[in-house]
Length: 213
Image 1 (cartoon, rainbow, N blue to C red):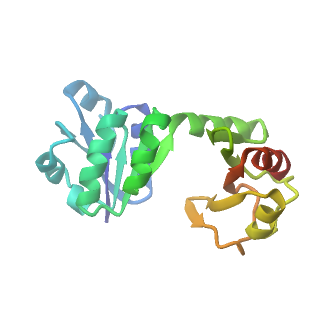
Image 2 (cartoon, one colour):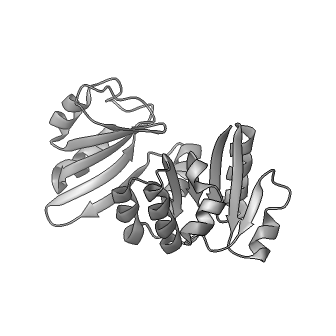
Image 3 (spheres, one colour):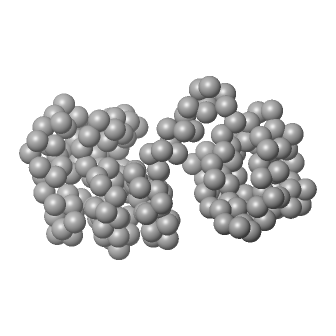
């Protein structure tokens, strides 16, 4: 049976643990204290209580056997535990993060799937209200980077990434499709729901974002 380790117990991690169990995972959870541990009662998972930054404690909780480690504590602690999990060879590490500006790059550089809470909320709101979704990731006097979700009405659906990039005058270095992050080879065809990273000269990127939905 596949094993998963969920670090931190709160309303969100409890729902995730239930999802993992229902999909065949043997789940263990780590609580920082007894009060937190009590939240985990009723979940078909073994709950360990202790400091998840302690590597020996993580071994006891089964990190070496885990295929998935999911992190739901504060950003600094999540990053510490992610580094341990990475050093132990865990294949998939997912962290929920609050301070995107301060921590996102560190998680990405470590090879961790980071889910910024604000981005998750905004994308769901845009989906339910059928709003075009875009987010400015970086901007200075010359360069901008945008994260854009392709709507079903986009004129660029089924066109190759390289053609869209050429028309926009911007680079599209990666595409997120479902759970897969694709480093763009240019020949990939854009689909509704794709999430594109656009980078380039500020004027070109702004115009591209307005057309690309």
